[in-house]
Structures are given as C-alpha cells and as structure tokens.
Length: 74
Image (cartoon, one colour):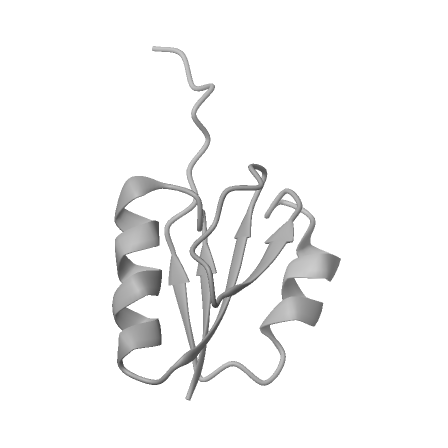
C-alpha cells in the first residue's frame, strides 16, 4: 500500500508517517520544510502547486491531507 501525507513535517503528520511505515506502507510526504521521518520519500514543495501534487499522488492508495496555511490572520 502507498500513502501520500501532505504537511509531512508537522507533529501529527510525522507520527502518522511513522505508524504507516511501521505497518509496511510506502509513504511519500510533502511539506515546505525539509524535516521528515527517515524511510519516507519526502518532497519539498507547496501543496498549492496542484500539478506537482497530482503528479506525486499518482499510484497512491490513499491521501492524508495534513497541510495547513500557518499564515492565516484573524
């Protein structure tokens, strides 16, 4: 099984990636930051780049969308 995790450098996403890897999944993580869980295929780009996101998600069985815009002001 293969999963894509957006926001892969975040706390919750890193724990999700770790658990997926423990359970035998192939994991691609995407984030603007270059911090990732060893064993995952980490890509650094903005998830709003839909062409890249669609290309990376090809062949994935599931997508966990954990990315968020941290620059939102109230």
